[in-house]
Image: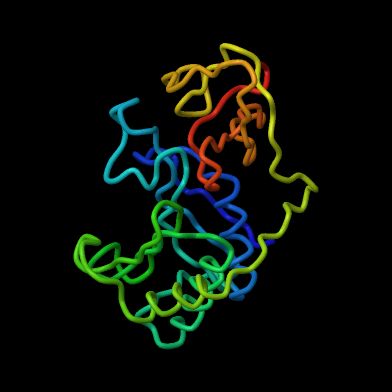
Amino acid sequence: MVRVVENTAGKTRDLPIASRLKQILSFAASVAGIDEVRVESGGQCAIGTCSKRVGSTRHDLGNAADLDLIKNGRVLKFTDSNDLPLFEAFVEAAASFGATGIGGDVGYMGPTRIHVGFGSRATWGGNAGRGAAPSWLENAATKGWNNPLSFPNPQNGSSLFSVNVRSGLNLRSGPSQSFKIIRTLSLGTILTIQGFDGADQEWAQVDLEGDGVIDAMYSEHF
């Protein structure tokens, strides 16, 4: 798998990206022949739970990343005709594997950076991301969505699984006890675990809606 580097320390969106998204980025990079995916803007707390956040909810709980693509030690540019096919292949593969929100344009985040994540299916671009996506990006994403690929199981052998919870389990908006409790579950609630987060991988990433998007987290110690 291709390395995904989260270069987000000290930035507003400095929470880790979701494990499923990280896997999609890695597999898409492998398909496209990219050496490294460098995340420059990652996850943030859920809306209404803290003030250290910016923009829409797409980045909430690590469900999106703004990223650069690296090959041969160089940051690629989609404005470069030699680099563009690599971006097209990466976007198509990411969409095939399950990314649903993809944006990029010179007037949005510059010629190197694109947004890849979950949420409602859409592409975008223009100044500040308020316009239509460039044709290359829209075409690549659409091709990927029209030709979905089975998402590979993680290489460590783990996979999605469900748990039957005890009464009073608290779900939080991020991977520590300092994050706000956003829901308390009742006995018998079924949770789908997407992966794990935190310094010791002790925080489970929870999908409550069955849509593959991380909605909350809880400590596996509880």
